[in-house]
Image 1 (cartoon, rainbow, N blue to C red):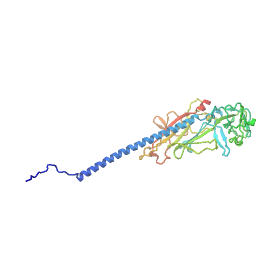
Image 2: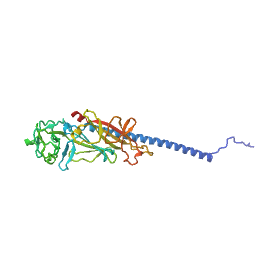
Image 3: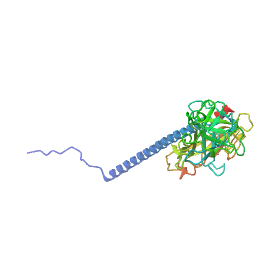
Image 4: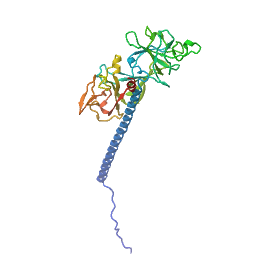
Length: 377
């Protein structure tokens, strides 16, 4: 007869519904916490990355402007008494235009100087393969003459752009832009040691009698050798980028602005002036000089660019316009300064941007001496 054996193994059972629900809740809470941590970390990463991009764009914008201003005026400011002269020019097939014989011209972006909408900066300089030296006229030159008589044509090359400058500025006088020609078959039209030809026609597309003063130029006036003249205008585009437009030597017109660096939302510039002739800048203002004496006072340009992070923040991270710290001793005209700590600050406009408070901003600024002006003063 078989004996009955009783199992000693414990009874098995599964999870209860309550235990499953508690586990699901704990799992969901864990996933939620992890998601929030990852979201915060990713947001911080994007803010840092975009902030780094803004710093790069701002630094490159400032470097570009600083380099241009440092080179501004080369070849154009070698005769200090000529600064401020209005240059008239015309290339065949294009309309006549006017430039100011000055290293840097600032155009205020607002209707009034105190309006801190973005400014524009125009730089003028010579670009030559050799040395740019002024040339003294040894005879008169009427608007219809085809060559200048000079003491020396050293540095002149065919197709160089030159500016005829009157010794004395006044009513009915201005500067004229023309290009050098050379016709070896005609002695009076060939480039020589004491002759600068400016014949019209195919070889002289910049040579037009209508842009000359009625009296032309006289003994004692000068020529400035600009090589391939450079006139560039820097501005802030509608797409919030630093942009540059340049006068074309082949068309005679200012080309379309080319965007250089994105997320640049403001550009402000001031002339640094020496008003007491001691060689030190004692005043900053945005008033463009109207006389030669006024231009001689301009020794430096002070600029600031505002770069914006491209990261849109959910919360408002900027509650007021960025403040440009200009120090405690600088004197400014044409703009309102406020006290910020022990310094003076200028509020820079950024509210032209949609939802501007949801972005971060950084100001880059510098003072650039006009070294070509200082060397020639």
